[in-house]
Image (cartoon, rainbow, N blue to C red; front, side, top):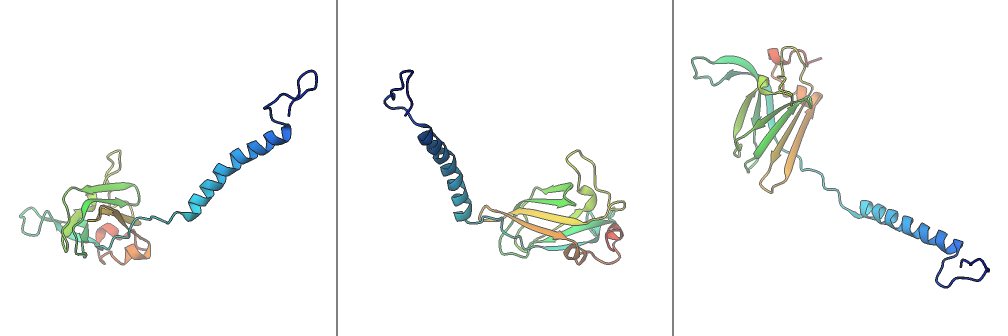
Length: 171
């Protein structure tokens, strides 16, 4: 208890020892609660997206078009039983493409590599840049965002041999 000028304790005041313990409790209890929540909360990672990917030349806009030309493309196939919504792709974590239409179960989408661009509208030039990673995001029927990330050996196995667009990305 603290004292006044006449060294008599003031009723209701705290001693130094009591104040120290109070400050320790006030700071340690929230920290311990945060640690407890971190340890006790289950891990909620995004689900893994099952996707078939092929990277190679494809006729664009389609094989029947009189103006068709062979361009390097990413061919995505949905091997699942459910459609995908809001499909986003990322090349090298720098170039992006948003596919506006849903991809039905078993459906396939062909996307030319030149359609990918940065947020500053710089386009991906497959002739000059290696394709080192591909990330695919899609909304599955549960509403969750599922992710597939291909990098290194996984990505190289999806590249069709002889593809002029990806010759630089192969070691």
